[in-house]
Amino acid sequence: MKINKLLPLKDILIIDDAEKIHALSDDENIDRQFKLHNLLNRFKIKRSLKNLSYNGTRFPHMLPKQDSIRIERHTGLWNLFNSKAAAMAEGPDELEPIAKWIRHETTDKEPGILAQQVIGQFFNPAFKATQKSWESALIFHEDAVTTNLPKWLWWQLTGKAQHAKKFLALTVNGDIVAMHGIGVAVHNLVASIHKLRLLYDDIAVRKNITPEKAVDLSLSAPPVVLRQAVTKGVAAGCPYSKFTLFMLKLKDANNDGNAKDLIFMTNSWSRCPAEQWIPAVISGIWNRAMTSERKKEITQ
Image (cartoon, rainbow, N blue to C red; front, side):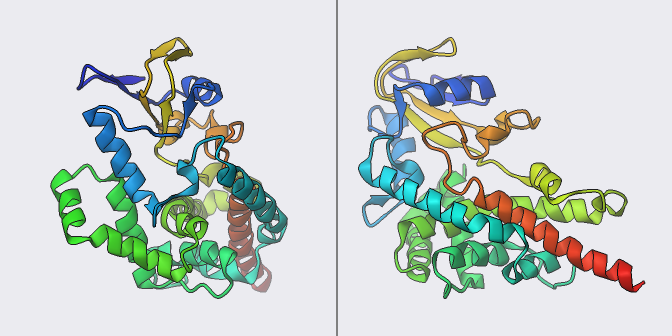
C-alpha cells in the first residue's frame, strides 16, 4: 500500500494489496459519494467525475452504494446480462469477426471496433461500431488515465475529450449505461481478446485449452477504481481520515491470479452486473475460434 501525502490535510491512499482491497470494499465507511475537499483530492475527483459523467449524470460505476437509481439499474442489468450469458458462451455468429481476428484471418490490426460492436449491440441490436466510435473510445479512455498534464489540459481547452464523449453518446442515443460499455468496459474486453490471440498462437498448447481455461487465462481487471471515506475509520490495519480518497489498483492486486474475484468485484456491493456475461463472451469467442480449427483437422 502506498500513501501519498503531498498535502498534509488529507491523504490519497493507493492500494494494490488484495487483502486490503477486500477489507476496504466491506467497510461501510468507504463509498462512492465523492465529496470535494482539499486541493489534491478535489482535482482528482473532479477530473474523474467530469470524465465519467454525461449531461450531469454519473456513469454507473461512479454512483454511491445507497443510490436508488444505481440499485434499480444494477438489478435490471444483472438479470438482463445473465439471461443472455448462456447463448454467448455457445459462440454465436456475432462473435465470428473476433474469432477471425484471433486466427489472423482479418486485416484488422486491432480488435477494438469488433469488441465495441459486441458490447454495443447488447444494448441496441442496430448499433454499428465504426473507426470513429472506436477512436472516440480511445480518446475517452486516455482522457481518464493520462499522466501527461499539458496534453490533458489542451484536450479540455479544445474540447477534444468532450467531443469524443458526445459522439459515443450519439451512437447509443444517450444511454449512460451503454456509453459505459462502449467507452470504458470495452477496453478490458479488448485486453482479454489480445490474450486469447496469444493463447491461440501457441500451437503446442491451444488444443488443450478449454473455453473455461481460456476465460481463466484471459480475463482482465480494471486498472483502478475510486472510493472515498465518508468518515474516519480503520480497515485492515490501515487508519484513514474523512474524505480520504482510495485508488484501488485491481489489476495489480490480481497480478499473480490469486484474487480473481477482484476482476468483477464479485463479493462487493459494487460487483459488475456483467460478471457472467463477459466470461461467456470470452468462452464463446474461444469456442468459435477452435470450431474452425477442428474443421481444418477433419478436412486434412
